[in-house]
Image (cartoon, rainbow, N blue to C red; front, side):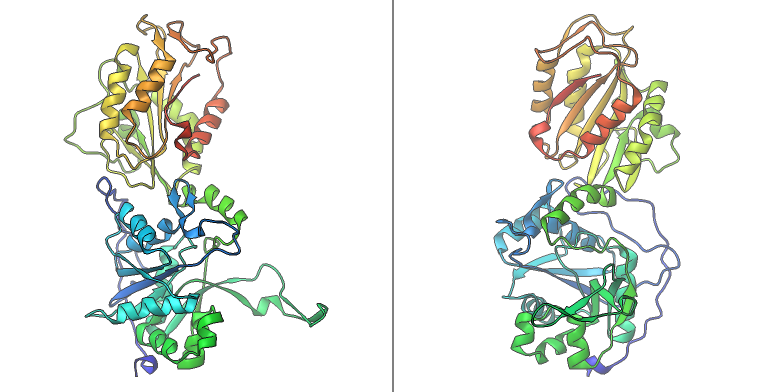
Length: 463
């Protein structure tokens, strides 16, 4: 029987690669394991239960569809699994097939299949397992991960799968933060557990496929309706003791409203790439430079990159690095990015008459899925064309040029010394304020990077 057969895995080392940017609107980049980490063998698939009604959330919209940083919550988990090179297929079990299929289609997730969920967590997972069993070539190992857990650390996932291959089942765990107590029928203390002897059961979990399928075939209706722990089913019905793998603090689950606030604060820093577009910086930074080598240089004439760009970046570097997972540099706008990328442009402008055309060209080259997009134009006031620039008109031009972009786009006209006299604004624009210090620019950029709503789209800010 498959559930009783022990399976060893010798593994292999896999050389990590530099970050890879997908083609526009394509799937997330493939993730590879660091050198020296054991790589799972055989065919691995995943089942993602995402059919819950979010009763504890108290939201009309099920939490898997609630937008977090401009994207449905479940997208983060699915993109993470899609990007794993040795993950062959992902089955997401949903309550609303049309809605989930639209999420999958919008994120270009080629490995993901959507099927109808059951009436409980266990019944939904069982439906997913049976869908995999119906394939011509079922997986050797199946991973279970909640759609409400947006972070899937690759090293934890790999460890869990390798341990499942060896021992039949494995799951991520974390130490208890609070002591667990048991009350009696009158809500008086009955027993207090020794915290150090227990662990929180987290996700991901993994099983040899035959183990999990056999466990679900043998479980009772009561277990299927009210149970929540897959590892317990494997132990009870297949006598397979799961190997417990220490997890990381990132293995949290969105359950209540407060968890959404945590997700909105942390997910951009844990998942988003930021592309700094600047010819000067791209040629001087040690990080990997992205961009098509054959493309034309957009920074010529009145909009160009100079030494001032390095000074501005130096003042913003800490802010940019804290707001994203990885920072990359490109000399051009046509860098292929995923929807998990923001774009920050740092350049100089010496003539406002060509600024609108430059922004239109940039809009045509920047991936529509990227966001937020921030342009920082350092104004060389002693060289600026004396023709007045209307801020109100420029804001409308920005909105029109980037009308097809999903994220907010903001233009900052940054004056190192003072606001040029040739700029005239609308009724809300003041020219009498003192020049902003470095901290004000940092705070502004940090705030803009946290924006996902298009209610802020098209703003032109004069500093």
